[in-house]
Every structure is written in structure tokens, then in C-alpha cells.
Image (tube, rainbow, N blue to C red; front, side, top):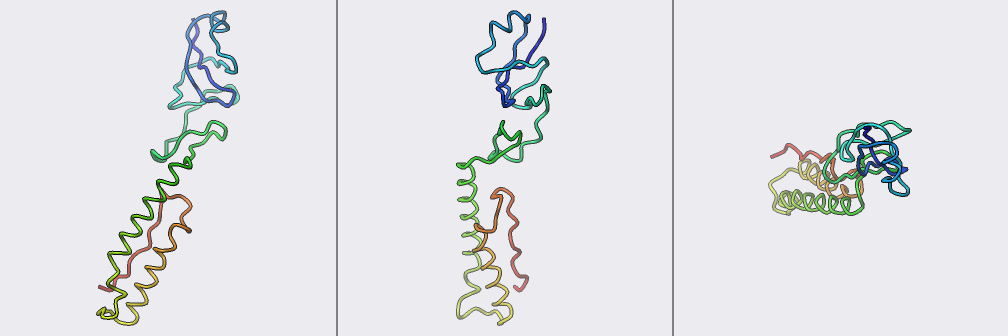
Length: 143
């Protein structure tokens, strides 16, 4: 008895089969390929006839892209992550709204530092390439 992983031509493992080569030929779905060995579609993929381990998943927003053999963030997940980014940005902006009020106790230099910080926050959605790994600007240390 031999064990094979059943996979798409792109290398995405969809199952496994243990049996004889003759039984494999009878049970192999159309458009699929068998590679001798063991592996799970959750943790492995096939490339050039070798069963390889997937790298660690960056976050739950990522799904395995069999064509590129890499983790990729989906359009839906990207939209949700950017929505979360904008919500956090709005929270951080609201927390320092007082710094821009006319009666703010800040000096002109401190006021300018807070204005620059707030501008960096407002720019974030357009400057962030990966909404799951945002580098947030540091608020001024003027309070």
C-alpha cells in the first residue's frame, strides 16, 4: 500500500489516498494529480513533484494562493482590514482633537507638532500597503 496526496495542477492539496496504483487510477478525480507522500492541504503544497511545507500564515486575513505559492490577503479581507485601520485612525484623531482648538494650552511649536501628527494619521489609509501591519505615527511628547 502506498500513500499519495491528491492535488490540483497548481499544487493545492485537496486530499490523500492510500492504496494500490491501480486503485489510485480508478479514484483520481479528473484534472487532479497524485504525488507519492504525505501532507495536509492546511500545511503543505506540491511544487515540481515535491510536497513542501507552507510558510507560517501571516494572519487570519490571509489565504493560501496556490497559483503564486504564497499567502495572499483577499480583497474582502483587505477591505475589512482597511475599515479597521480607518476606525482606529479616527479614534486616535478624536483623542487629540483638543490640541487643535483655539483655546488649546499648547505652544505654537507643540501645536505644529500635533498638527503634523494628525496629518500623518489622516494620510494613513493611502500610505499603508499592508493594513494588517501598520506602522502608526508616534504622537508628540509635548503634554
